Length: 402
Image (cartoon, rainbow, N blue to C red; front, top):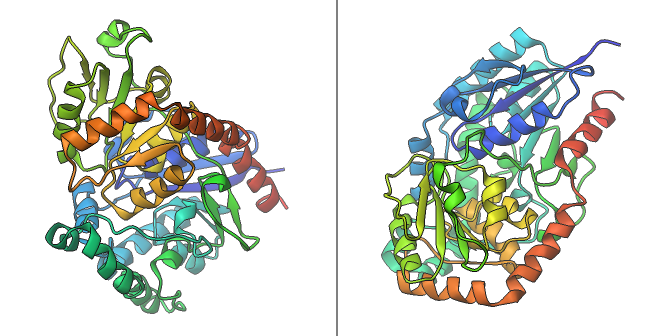
């Protein structure tokens, strides 16, 4: 029997959307599958050559993506989506895959339909139209002007219209290619696909009546292929708390200084991974800095993880049974932290109104209250039942090889 050919697309606007396709692509048996991974090469140095064929595609810049998030604009306009579809179709024609898999490559719903190739969308369950959620207002010009309280009231009133406006560029592009429109709701844009796989566990979200083509995959855990820094062996023993701090490639990097100021008054060591976004001087006393750290080892060494609240680092922390303090800024991060705080395994503070005093108080409470660790360990147990690599292989067996 000939091998099935799987073409993965990664949208390299943030590191997470490259990491998940990379992990899943490398989980497949090369005796059964011929794999091609397409991504913008901007993060290539963090992903070692594993023998999988790679193709270069273009993604909008991370600055443009994060800038749109910061002001609540649609992430992609019609011109960009049209260019993406044209680039997708060119690569699909060249590779001739049996299946296309994408992570935040929103054009692929159109490209797969036009090419007649099934499309698998990797996303998060909090974007599901079937999830019961209350949407916290993210950091927007509205909240910076009026505050989070009044901003939340106005956001609740405007959200259905806002979600419809965010879907408009997609539907204009679909019309351009002669395709039927999606529902006028951002959630249907983010979960468009012949199959939808949620890189989460169901324990964190209230979801009911999923259709047969929607499945949970489990967290897709990844650590960058980097060496341990020279200071790793100088970390204190467990007699002194250790905090792992990273805001990743999409967090509110301006909050780093405030977080470090808060940690200065604590009897704790702080490991900081900057993702190369801002220079920070390390301190022989308590601050240890690197551009990137092997995340799995960092969370294992830590007593508490402070991050942007997004799923990659929070899931890595929870898989190790470590509580999380989120400092979210965008909607994705707020939605993810909602599930974690409801489970009792974390807290969050808004990045736009962050103060060192408030953060230090929360950190002290989380380090002293064993309930956070207990809840995190319970989620670690729940996560242990979900192996995303194994689940993805089973999915392909069900779908591609039927």
